[in-house]
Each structure stands twice: as structure tokens, then as C-alpha cells.
Image (cartoon, rainbow, N blue to C red; front, side, top):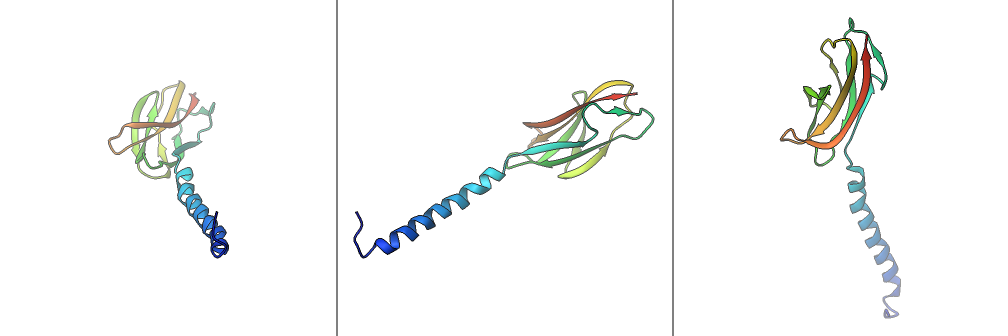
Length: 121
């Protein structure tokens, strides 16, 4: 029970406290790490005679620092830009798996990755 003289102040105080809590929680919800390979598309056919590029966009989140690129589970590049591309070495004909993984400062994957399967002809 509040004293009658304090009632006009209680509601604005509670609303202000609730607003502060929402502001404090909102950045945490936006801090989720994510990575997306924009090109090539999953299932794409790549020309063995062309220079093929891996185009990506990443938000490393609070635990990530940068990304590594992989071809068939072999690390091929360390990438520090949040949005960029990497020219792939010539790949032999056949199926391949391209991945971009978020890693921490110790270069350990944090479990967030995007992969596509391609076929080189």
C-alpha cells in the first residue's frame, strides 16, 4: 500500500524502471553472431577455368573476432572484414563444400558457420 501523497509518483517510477530494463536487455538480443555466404549459391556449378569468389557477410557477436574460410574442411583463409570476398584457388572438378566459420581471437571456431555445396566442372 502506498501513501496517498506518493501515488502520483509510483506509476511513472515503475514505467521508468521497466524502460531501463528493456533498454539494458535489447542490446543482448541483437548481439547474436551470424554468418552468411552470399555467393556462390548452394548447389551452384562453378567453372574450373574461372576465378571463383566466395562472398560473405558476418556479424561475429560478442564471442567472435573474425572468420576463417574452408574448402572441403581445410582452412584456406583468415578473413577480417565483416563483409567481403575471397578469391578461391583453382578447385579440381567435382563436388566441394565451402564454409565460413566465426572464430575467436585464439582462432577457435565458436560454432557459428555457413556452408554451401558446389560442383566444379
